[in-house]
Amino acid sequence: MNRRFEQQHDRILIHEIRENRAHRVAWCFHIAIAVMGLCFIAGSLVKMP
Image 1 (tube, rainbow, N blue to C red):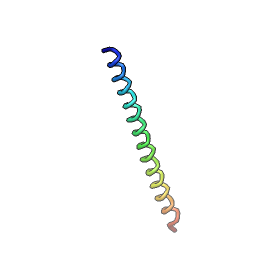
Image 2: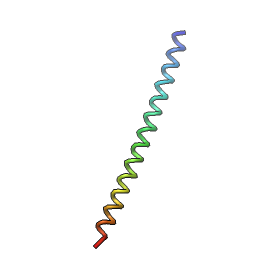
Image 3: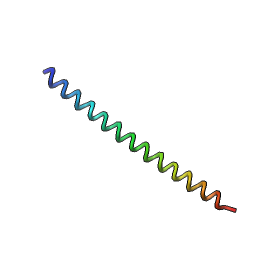
Image 4: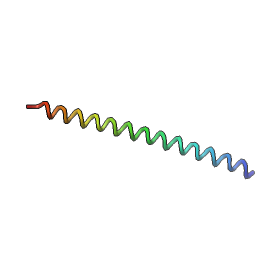
């Protein structure tokens, strides 16, 4: 009984780690898009006479 509970707990931990990694990748992706957008806007403003 106890061993089964421990295995379940490990599975939950692994699931949480995967979820955290997915969230981190999503955050990096959003930050990259935001930076690219800001650079594009800055470039457009600089090109304007």
